[in-house]
Amino acid sequence: MYGYIYKTTNLLDHKIYIGQHKGHLFDSYYYGSGSWFRAVLKKYGKNNFRCEIIEECETPESLNKREVYWIEYFQSINPSIGYNLAKGGEQFIVGCTEQEIRNISNLLLSATVDNIYDIISDLQKYGLRIYEKNERWQPTSNNSNGTKMIATDNSVVVSFYIKNQYSITKEYAHMFKCPYWKYNLMVEIYKIPDLLKKLFIDYESKRIIPESFKGPGRGTSGIFFETQKQTKSVRMPLKL
Image (cartoon, rainbow, N blue to C red; front, side, top):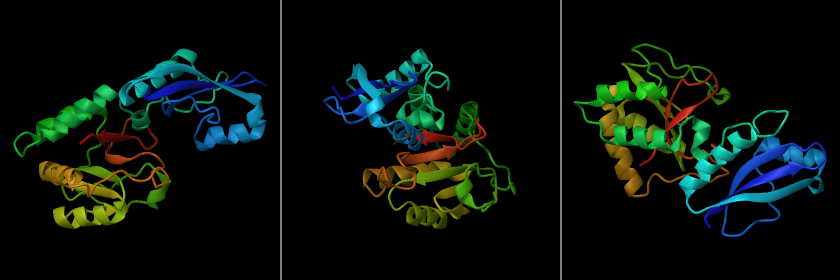
């Protein structure tokens, strides 16, 4: 067993929380994560909750997929039924299914100078955000402290949720002569093939590695492209 899907039930109001947990054995002390649900546990007292396994999974992919399934099955996003705030799956917080992630990554990793604009056009169906020349960045999160980047040509925003994210973002910005802010890089579309080559080299050499789960992204780890699928911050993951 790689991990399992669990259901935690509030014995007082019978609301439920569906989640996934990695491990070969059932952890009887683990009832769920996320700041919101931890607050719920504290409010009602952990002794007023029951946690049970509803499915065992053998791979990370199946763990993500089945978490989404069970959240949908129990309708635990409905506030009258459960405490879940998202549809589940580690990568689903950025608005993409596992199949979409593979499709997106395969498209990007096949990018060349000749086909990059066709690829970007294809990626727009997944909600990829395109900035036109002289257009100001419109951040969707509060940590940006306002607009900090302006497109010098048709561009996309790439975010580095990795260890040493600030220094690596700055290095990439200087290398590709792009505007940047914190861990966000605004890169011109025609530079993306070279950017991806550099990313792949740095990933293979382990210069780019996931951040700690206690890091700035708090579990959201990797390289992401900004999308416009929702009003809140939603990102398109790149799987190298």
